[in-house]
Image 1 (cartoon, one colour):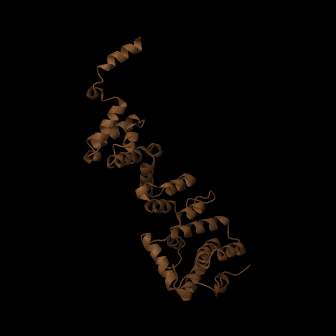
Image 2: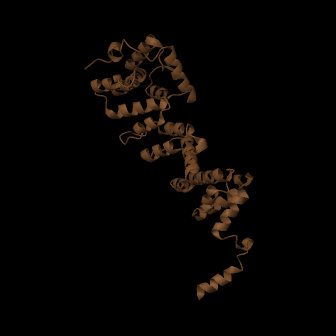
Image 3: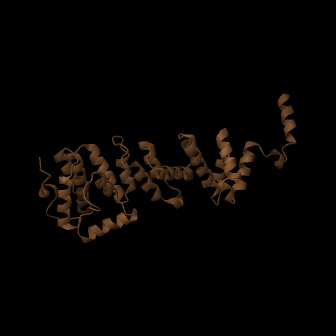
Amino acid sequence: MLDFTQFNAAFPTDGPKPYDQNGVRSIETFRKGFGGVLFIDRVLKALDIGEGKAYPPKGDHGLRSLHRQIYESRVSSHHKLSVLYYLLLDYDGIRGTRSQLAEALAEESCLPQKYQILMRGLWHMDRKEFKFALEHLAHPSLPSEFADEIVVTLVRHADADAHDYSLALAYYHATQPVFKTSEALELLFGAYAQTNITEALSFSRSYPEHTRQQLFEKLVLSVVDDPLAAGPRGKELASLPLTGAEEKWFQDLLTTGEGKKSKNAKLVARMRQIVTGRDRGTLGLNSLAPQATNAGKA
């Protein structure tokens, strides 16, 4: 078994290297696109490896320094090897599909598969290769590590114009994480609201009442603030089978609450009245009620 505490055992000394000026610039471009934080940054911070932005290392000197920091850290050998695995994926990335440096390290060091799956998934996330990332991060063997950050990233980088939040929703369905931040919950629910109103309502009902009301109101506002509120989304919202509490939240939001400010508030409220039969007088249906009742007695 190779001694990966030795730099020359961990990294190749010949061939293309990923941390030259162009490579570092490319990685920094990805970091900027993610608001200044990559997933490998989160991993290093969680393991207390390096100070500040230890990644990407700049040239051989920077890589040697990072390698030393990895093996001087007080984390488990599996965690240390996981970081090396990620770095070797950078090497494989520039050397082509035939390069298997990361896999060779994993095999030689007996790195457990779950660490390989996680780090490869995060590596793809850092390169905006989200479909490939999900093939790994949604694996049932993984804990919901970085689940909040993954959901936030997938929602924020979805095709909002096409309302395509399928990757974020697929990740949630596969992993069923318990969110630690309100940001992740709100963004995921917003994705639900834009994708399937009925499923969004069902999702909101899985939370305690206070949070449930907030999510429900967010759902209603996502429709009334839509310029096409009179279309299918508005009709679907108006036709939802609401509980008594939800009906009250709906009416209060559109008559006295924040939703009242929307120019579509009256339209959506009226659509709901029609669906629930509360607008008979306005529609001239009162005169039909007795006949309907008598017909029912006949």
